[in-house]
Amino acid sequence: MSLKKSLMEDLKTSMKNKDTLRKNTITMVRAGIKQKEVDERRELDDEDIMDIIAKQLKEKRNAIKEFDRGGRKDLVEQTEKEMEILLKYLPEQLTEEEVEEIVKAVIEEVDAKSMKDMGIIMKNVMPKIKGRADGSVVNKVAKKYLK
Image 1 (cartoon, rainbow, N blue to C red):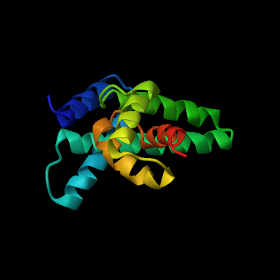
Image 2: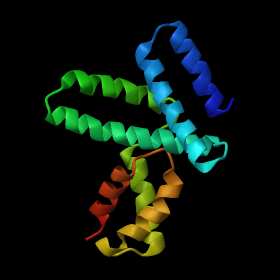
Image 3: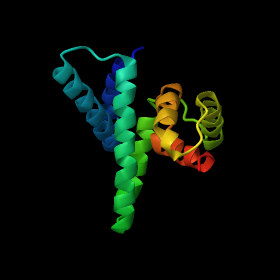
């Protein structure tokens, strides 16, 4: 089943079960998909949809930091639950150790020596981990190995 159909089925189920949080989260993803389809005038495939979900996850991580700074524990908890729902539609996330192995291999591959090579590293690592890890994790790991 395509990701789009899966989202629609889950939306129907959440509406029947009166699961408001899940319904709202899936509706938000579907709105992002629809917006991109209208903008680009084409049907999105599963990879494009995973990109949209990954982008929304990143936005939610940033929102959690802001809510935490503002002392809004209720919003932090709600956003974390939304993130759990979104993660179910992405491939299994890589651990930091797995990301570290990929980054080390790329650093050796491109013979990176300093922080000036960060762009090259990111350009080579991101396609390998697409949808399975956040770019900020990759950046943090790469900084550890570069001077």
